[in-house]
Length: 118
Image 1: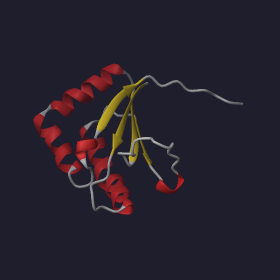
Image 2: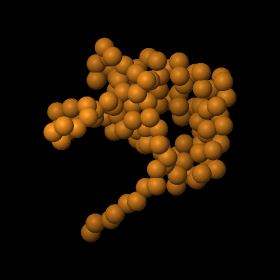
Image 3: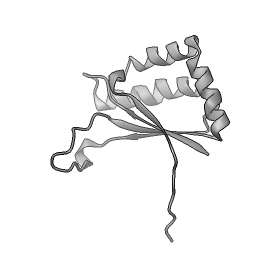
Image 4: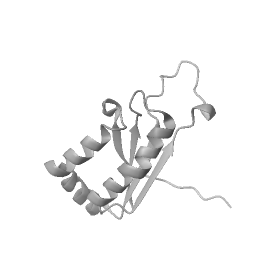
């Protein structure tokens, strides 16, 4: 498996409920239709009530941690080729304008290590 993580911020003025609703009902189906290489897609919405922030830490500038899996690096590369096509990238960016503050978007390729506990 090949994994990416994105840190995304809610558009100013949009409630948490509206943010989650739009992401789940509109953006997820769009992404799945445009990038069929994706084999796993998880959204981890930050619960501000349960957050722990160390004293002096920078302010949190994201509202969701998104995880996207691809079967392998080749599938990821193929998805990025599609994403780079103007008609695909423009559709994604246009939709993101409805619910994200795109100035804060960060996406990373990660090397995931999992511990199992018995």
